[in-house]
Length: 268
Image 1 (cartoon, one colour):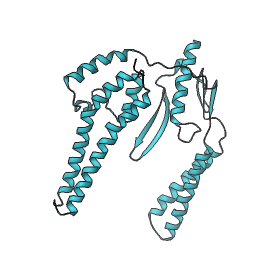
Image 2 (tube, one colour):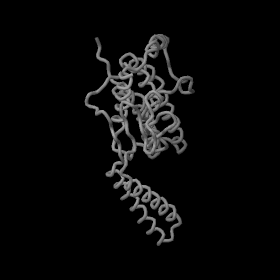
Image 3 (cartoon, helix red, strand yellow):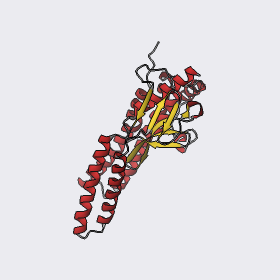
Image 4 (cartoon, one colour):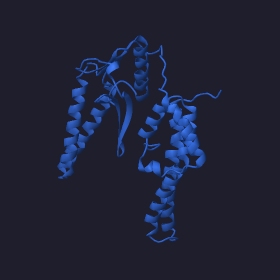
């Protein structure tokens, strides 16, 4: 029997063909356009054409490989619901009915295989208890991260003061952002209380009552990207908590959600 691979292993392999390869094609063709222009082989209008061709080739590569990856991943991963959600979150694939999904190249054989694999989505994802996980996990602000951010904010304040002496208008913006960030980090550094408590009973946020697993829905850890910035969040019900400043990582928190829910189900 073939060994089942983990969701993260499948996602990592998917990134190679569905993210890195298309990006390599796009960047490579754009660079080629500039090289040909500087070698005077193509005129200046060849550069914007290189951008268009690059993005088209990147899209074609994604369209050709996406269903091949889906079939391989759905066949080899047990928890296909988690796999599909993470693949959509990380922009490896598109959601059902989206415009990008309609642009996928899909052979008749691939259509048949994907249709057959739909039955796996009728099963719930399976998770197991992990004895290395304590009975309760208390999560605080990470002092190391906050001090690092505080130092950066002091750097912005210094830069803002220097630019103000040079009578640069942008100094007010930089100084204002630096002061706000410094205030925010100092406020968090003074907060020594737990921000999140998780156990087999449920999840408790700061200054809130514990929410039982029986009343928790759509609990997950995900990354939200905006331009070049990305933020990791814990989300459940109507809550969305930034976890980047906390004493826990993405994968560790995700594992805790699975383990404590399993313990709750076993006890109830």
